[in-house]
Amino acid sequence: MTSSFLPDTPVVPRGALVLLAPATGAVLRVIALQYNPDTVTRTLQPQGVGAEAGERSEALRLRGPAHETVKVDVELDATAQLEDPADPDAEAVARYGLLPVLAALDLLVNPTAPALLAQDAAARAGAFEIAPTEAPLTVFVWSRDRVVPVRLTEFTVTEEAFDSNLRPIRAKVSLGLRVLTVDDLGFAHRGGALYLGYQRRREQLAALHRSSRLGTIGLGTAPGGS
Image 1 (tube, rainbow, N blue to C red):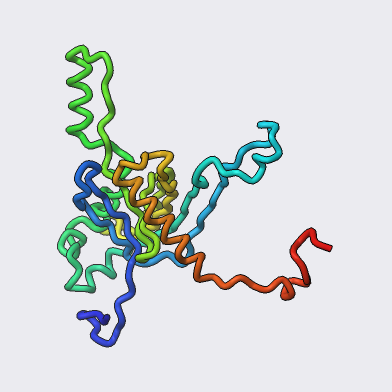
Image 2 (image 1 turned 180 degrees about the vertical axis):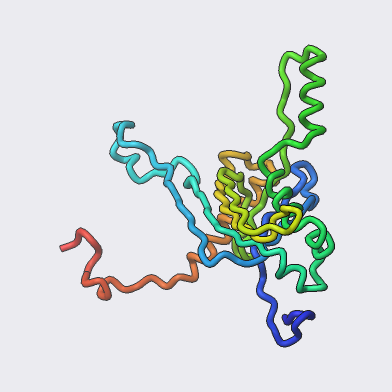
């Protein structure tokens, strides 16, 4: 695949955050990363059965999926978008700089004004319990092999340059994401199904890894053997 803007340049898939309607799975918004980060940091914390349980036979058991977090640093540059006439956001960027995309990211961690007003109206009407509005399901897409539901846990924006109207035209965004598993969403939830697909893909990729021979690490027999 090549770019229509630069015919001889292959198109590199971009990472993205995709917002889905929880009930229907309809795509509400796609926030494509302008530049793919140089690094993606993933941390996995296993959910093991603690030694305090007392049963030694439990030491190797896992209670559930590991707690996985992802950190990425994203660079945004309005001037680069303006140089590409095919960019669908070029007109908005020309008027508002990076404010539209930064606002879209802000909304990942903020309820909408109508949702806040609805909660206030329910409180004024004497509602005993006010259920928070369910936010869109956020999905982190990092190639076809990594499509996983997440919750934004950390969001830091450093605005580095501004136009004459003080609208940011260059910024760095640090995102911290927590992978949502079936423990968080349940098996029937659309996000739970996405997580299971993510886990199955990991298992398929792991099956492609050819195990090294024990001799390559200086062992002629299984560990613990004579």
